[in-house]
Image (cartoon, rainbow, N blue to C red; front, side, top):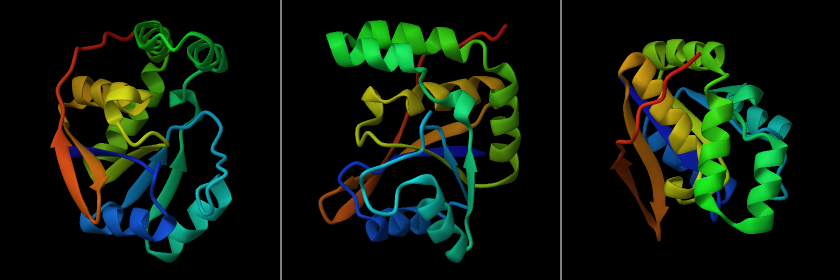
Length: 162
């Protein structure tokens, strides 16, 4: 059982879709609090349409997005540790959403979607860790590197849910 993550920063919609296809992704789980983008094809409706045409499903899990106060503070101070602490505190309140996501991961090849190219500086890695802790899924981060792609396995701290 595997949970994938992917960020679309630096990708066009065709390269993004190619990476998903290369990894046999069936469901893209959008974990952006606001599924809007200035990049063509990555806003909620447009993305859902492209995914559906390719035989993939789109699911938006708003509760797994980073809350606005945490995002705003990070924009102000750039303090990754404070951002991580703030998001993990939020994530502890999202046990039902993690359980639902884990059920999807058990039954389908799912990829968690956010913007940032580097999963090390994106909340999707923390969500993936929570899924791993909940259901034992392995984590694979899909990354575009130049004209090719690579994947990275991830570990991380465990999270307890209330």
